[in-house]
Amino acid sequence: SALLPDSVLLRTAFSWESVVDEFVFVVGPPLAALTSEAAGAPQAVALTALLGTSGTVALLAQRRTEPPARGRAEHGAQWVLRYSGMPSLMVVMAALGLLFAGVEVTVIATARESGATWAGGLVLALWSVSSMVTGLVIGGLRRAPALYRQLLVGNGVMAVLLLPLVLSQGLLMTSIILFIAG
Image (tube, rainbow, N blue to C red; front, side, top):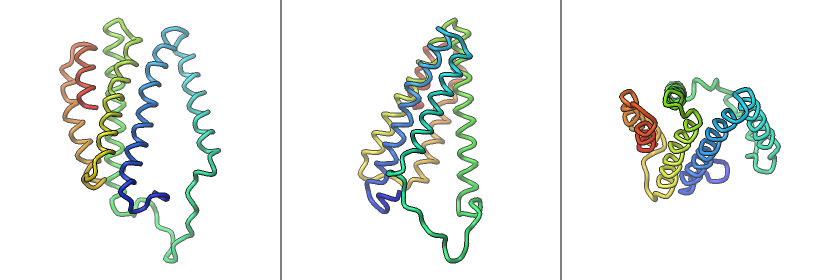
């Protein structure tokens, strides 16, 4: 936002950020599932903590990419919840977090029930791959709806496309549903 204010490239940059985020979810769940299967759940949690902490420290160390500091507005600071749209955005993000957590629990439970716990991470990675493709497509659009509209419509469509998970009976059907919803 600091480098590309009011630029048509800002939407592409946001999409690229989403694609990179999804890449973490393409690699992470299979790595966690395979580590858990090979070495045990505590080792998978330890590996996750190590990688997450290392990535956070590396990101915090990136001073050259930090946007310039802005001074306080003359009219004073405003509590973040008083910004227009922030309460609504928090509700949407909380619902999205619950949706993601529910899908992840559902996938791992389905994989365990199928006797293929290791495959749960691959199913979640498939969901992320289809989401990455969507991010690349949206980022490549020359004209796209406003960001708030993309957020609401995209999340609404994804929620509807995930409803068939309630009826899913196995990993194959779950994979197909998640690929389409991504």
